[in-house]
Image (cartoon, rainbow, N blue to C red; front, side, top):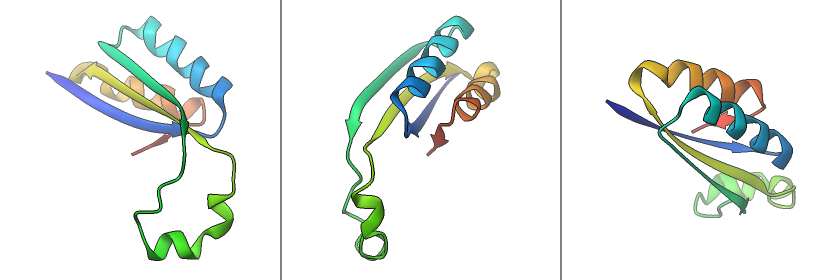
Length: 85
């Protein structure tokens, strides 16, 4: 069974390191977007965090893994500073 993980990183180098390790772990598919801008779709939370809107862009990572490797992939993402979604 395949499970999908989504994460964001504040640092491109950390994203690339995590992606390399995940590839070595044998993930099924990995995709990343280099310039994700914070979304303003969340109304109140956007208004409350104007400072975060001006912060550096984050970098998105999407990974498909076998169910048996899900926890390992999660741990790897967190180890390299990713935030799971």
